[in-house]
Length: 200
Image 1: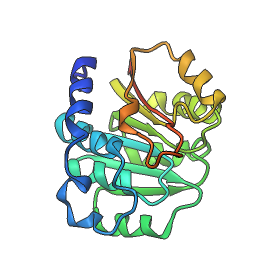
Image 2 (image 1 turned 120 degrees about the vertical axis):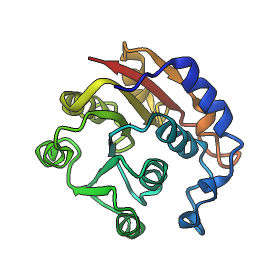
Image 3 (image 1 turned 180 degrees about the vertical axis):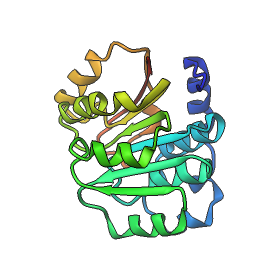
């Protein structure tokens, strides 16, 4: 069981902002997504707490996937998406602890459960459909896999009113870390980033 305290998460979030993009791993050379501080947060959390199982809903290029995989080579990272970017397949070839599942994030639960092989889910990253409904379904779907404590991190909690309503309804200990997903340009929408802890 991992021991997670909100204050420590806040400290990690503050520290990681000024860390080098890509955490100086050569795998991220030329990657256009590595500017986002939340990627470094996921890396630092994973490196410190070493979750045995990570499930990522919404992979796209696999940038977050690879940050988490590199941070704890002994942990298993399962990434789910219905439309993987070509770059994501380079990640699964480079990182032996990454498994991909193609399909709807909720409908592939049985496949994910088989790959998890009874490892406790200790980090769930939600970044697929930003409609307020899908993240709740993903949370409910993967809760049975969770260990005694699981960190749930979600990108784009202020993407629209549906996501904001979903975030507001979360009753677990939670914290907004919106500085981890700042506007990339002056006209870029500040879409937010949040974390909460599920205890079972």
